Image (cartoon, rainbow, N blue to C red; front, side, top):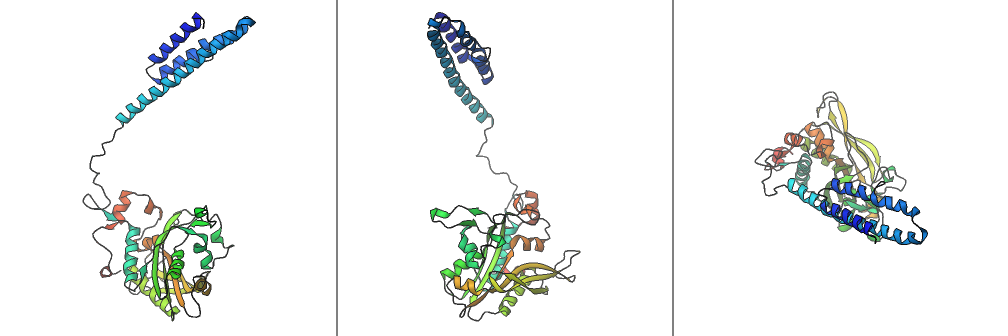
Length: 361
């Protein structure tokens, strides 16, 4: 390497080592390797070098360029590490400090979220009627969520815009979904045990919907009763008592209307009395749909290994957020999931006040 290249390389290596911050380092890079840089000028001048010397001169200039680029990369990494250490020191958080005292119910105690409270109340209410609580996976096989419940492949609920589909589980080829209802727990319960059966299934569900009254993730509670002599009378009596107990209105009007669901036959919508103008439950002469119900379809019983000639039953389902909003006069679904401490302070229940029948539930 000629003396001019040796001194040029040494000059810029020294400047790189002396750069104290990324801006200074970039200035050195531009001076050496930029469009008007010293090394770039030498490369552009190779055309004027005699042909017998051009190859050797070009190799030497490129060696200087490679050495400077390597030194720039090493220095840049070092400066980035110094900058990161300084930032971490400046933004350090003392994790040993105590938590700030502002839980929803005040500085001295926590509180129970309205949805959790409603689930506790439903558990206490139906527990007094002899129901057990069933639990299961949030990710379900398509068969449990739809097919076993007599929901055909062309049903709108099975379309992509309504259901969150997931890749097949464990490579077994079975289509999986985020459950759109807690009905798969009814199927699992019937497959796992022999009647009589009396369960409720509260839990999270998912559907592709989002507005003031719908959320992609929400909660449902479903109920199932299977026995040898179960009738519509049992269904009506159970739901009338449950709704009157939950809302704390002993004479709450309850109406049953014929409807259609693939998994029940006959099927019924259930309405409660309310005042459309004031929103007051139990009066006013108007009706508000609250849940769906019906006698378990014979095909569903057969899909779950039960002989429909021997066993009958009823099922029902309702949205937990919906009945919570109605009970407490809440107009919007979205605050349930926004973690606004002010809203939680106003709506949560005391943590030391568990739900019980003595509260009128």
